[in-house]
Image 1 (tube, one colour):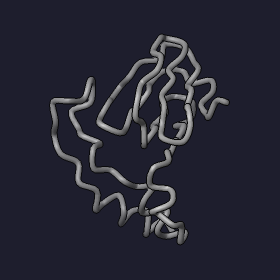
Image 2 (cartoon, rainbow, N blue to C red; image 1 turned 90 degrees about the vertical axis):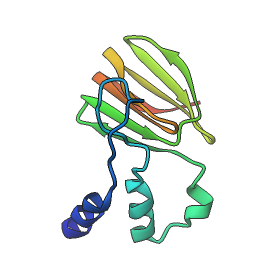
Image 3 (cartoon, rainbow, N blue to C red; image 1 turned 180 degrees about the horizontal axis):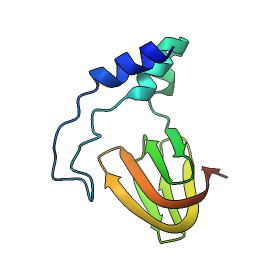
Length: 116
């Protein structure tokens, strides 16, 4: 399993871009979730318009599939995806990187998930 993940990460194309806020790397073409979905046999056509979310040890959150930023503050960032509203709650939150459909939120993350 680890060799598969390494192979997926190695194949990702990361190109320099000026559109990110802090990061010199573009995350525009990253689709790690698609690769995992393929490995699990998930129907990508059905889930392609959804979202993926990863909380990195309460230090950052990566969200793929965003369509709109709703709220930005140091304690709360809310984004809409085609299928859900995702909320990140914490302290000292900032948008570290923003691309067309992806966002990385950095800070002390206390909570991240779908809101009703």
